[in-house]
Image 1: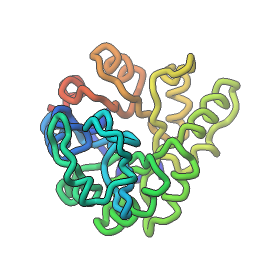
Image 2 (image 1 turned 45 degrees about the vertical axis):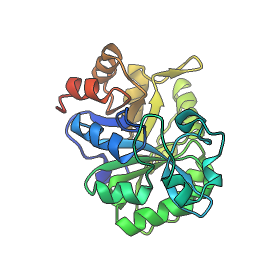
Image 3 (image 1 turned 135 degrees about the vertical axis):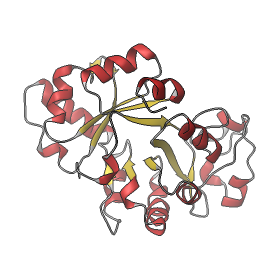
Image 4 (image 1 turned 30 degrees about the vertical axis):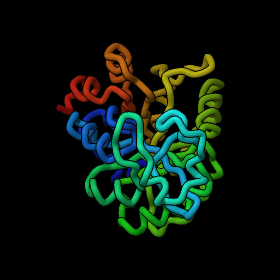
Length: 249
């Protein structure tokens, strides 16, 4: 899976984190802005409505974007479409995003196990297997989704798998078997005192054929430092700045 077409790009990949805000994150409008600033990939989040549709939304509830305490999973698709976001933008389904941007690549983080089947259906319907990556913090969710596709799709490691790889690497143990089929590790530079951005770890992972993508990197110094260390992709909220640094605009 490391040679999946999804990972083909010129130079360091620019992954726009939920699009370019404002307008509101994870909307068609925010994705258009991100593309204008050089984004080749959109990192977005998948949840499921009460009637079984895959929608693009990060949080479990609506508080941050609308002020409502309702959960996304309690809404029908019609109710979801009628939401009014504080910063504007149109509530968006995965189907709509894939259809609106037929050549854009999407990094899809499945937030809710209930979203597995709707996500797979949307990708199968759009025949988008070559331009999506499936990820999830849950290894179980990730594996269940991957097993349902009619053709291979790209994938990155879950949180638990990332930690297994990191700790084996720390003790000088082999990591190749853990990374079979994993196209990328998508990690922060550091978390809870654990560093993922060392030259040694980046190189060890890349020697297996797996790429290194770092999130969420928003300042010039950090972007340049990670590129110098060999990062294959930068996930960022600051798409305009990253696009300039990475030569995408």
